[in-house]
Image (cartoon, rainbow, N blue to C red):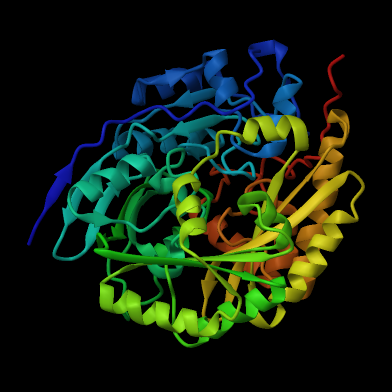
Length: 510
């Protein structure tokens, strides 16, 4: 049996686009409510248990933001959602535990963060307090080639993690667009899904166990066994919990041997519905190629230069015999115009490009909303939701593509944008999200596929989960009775006050 640790140097996160160049008192806090007061005595205790503590205005500004598009809009006018009192950078599980024990005793909120690539305010310190920067926890502690598992620290960035695995002949199969911006802990905390999840699974499938620190500093390890009848799977309690139940410090993940063979092909359909039906047919026959992406006509024209066509991209990888069989089923069910592999290859070469986002935000105020819908309702949800978004004043475009396919349904990824005036953008964001999310829920879709809930979707959680939210709240009270872990998120009640509305409470600077 092979046991291999692999050093991966820690690195700082990529700075968030749209930096305002302002620090300290010059920055307005946008969210309603108040930050929790942090005493000098608490700060001295904090520095005693974790030497790397920053109260620098620049650090506090940077860690009071993430990739939420609305936050970038605020930054354009010198505003930030909320500034933390301190940024703490633990270098070990023991330091994480010591920080949480102190914060729990003092009733200080703690927001765990890594690359902060979330687009819904998932890692914003809504009530101030401490931001826990976990990116010093980097590296693979054990690669088990015989078991096809890897133990990895939560602050490891995705691109360096995947590169290290590939050097040893393996892959995690998890390819989010934000792979260079995001960390392992963030992948698990938001229950992420990569671009090849149809073959390799989402983080709910990939994660076999976690080591997490609870609010009172206790360190727990969940079972590593994926097929076990020893009670409920405690690992899944933390997958998708967004740091509200515990701080993930390491994980055991499934891995795969690097695929020796791949095949790609694209098709053009006359309607979005026709493409949906083709995917449904081959999915029902058991074909699950790694990449399944169906773009509506607007996105097809934008990405591939087609006219009045809905483009489907298919890519698969693995053993040649298996891939060949899957692609034969796909080709048998795709009755659109065959386009060859060139468009797929074009997409593969540009799929992780995120660096034009800040320019788009200045010009078009774009955002995305990804959901999952059953096949029986998917096409209707697509038509109804894009229409509902377009009906919101200020919206200029509302489009969608299928990004992940499963036997019972698919992930539908909406993209929308507008050109409202800068001071009107928060209103527009709120209204277009209300229209989109509630249309999806009314049509039988779910609230999120892989971006999570954060602050942006918190107000929809009661509608989405019903009594399930009450159960989640009971679990929260049991594991975090003082409510210090990432308060204000997931639609959960907070002892620090109600979740602030984000339609923008702060006046625009003159």
